[in-house]
Image (cartoon, rainbow, N blue to C red; front, side, top):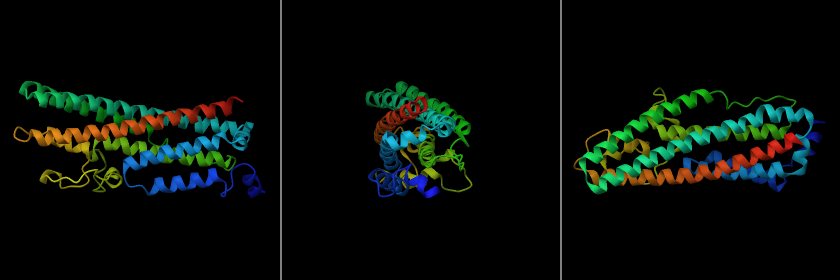
Amino acid sequence: MACHTRSNSFPSRSHPVALNFEETLRKLRSSSSIFNKLNGLQDLHECVNKVLCLPLTQQALGQYQQKKWVDEQLINGSLRLLDMSCIAKDALLQTKECVQGLLSALRRRRGDAISSEVKKYLTSRKVMKKTIKKALRSFKGCSSPCINEEQHETITMLKEVEVVTFAVFESILSLITGPKAQSKLSGWSLVSKLVQPKRVACDDQEKESDVNDFEKVDVALSSKFDNNTIHVQNQLKELESSIQDLEQGLECLSRLLIKNRVSLLNILNH
């Protein structure tokens, strides 16, 4: 009976939508770069949108018993993901503005302006790290799916997508704060494993491949660089490029999250 219910309530494995979803999820899990994971999330939520648009899905989730799970789990989960996206975008915007201010000061070669912008950057980073750490603590435990045998399997699938999305958001936020924000027990942070450097560093200060662009700039600005301003400028430009990539990916993903949230609300209100 259970198999019969599933075959009539969710696309079978041979259905193009189901096949696309499984393949997209597989690629996302095998991605090693945070940028690839972010792109993979966009593809995954595109698949989710297609699933939610299926009449069969809408009919199944529109049943009274399933509406309860949609309301209690999926609607609340989608809101948490949007909150995480906003936190990440705000942090990236603040960092980008500081980077651009510092680059401008370095081009003008004004010592007082450079000193002021460096102080502004480091202060902003310190406040940002505290904000992100606080946010991550508040979200801790919210990403675990609450599975119940009464749930429709589409809800279980969507909860799985939520967990994967939450994990990538967590990695992005940890990337912004820098690997040092991770637990020292493991020796290597989760972000260090996920993020591969986009460029091969040639300077002795950049030998460790697990150091990301945010951390490189933090280290450079925390020490004297009077005789190496060109190197610092290059690092700032690389960070600016990374931020732009992340911003574009997050903006596209946020639009998809909102779109799918609206679809769920429509199902709930019918």
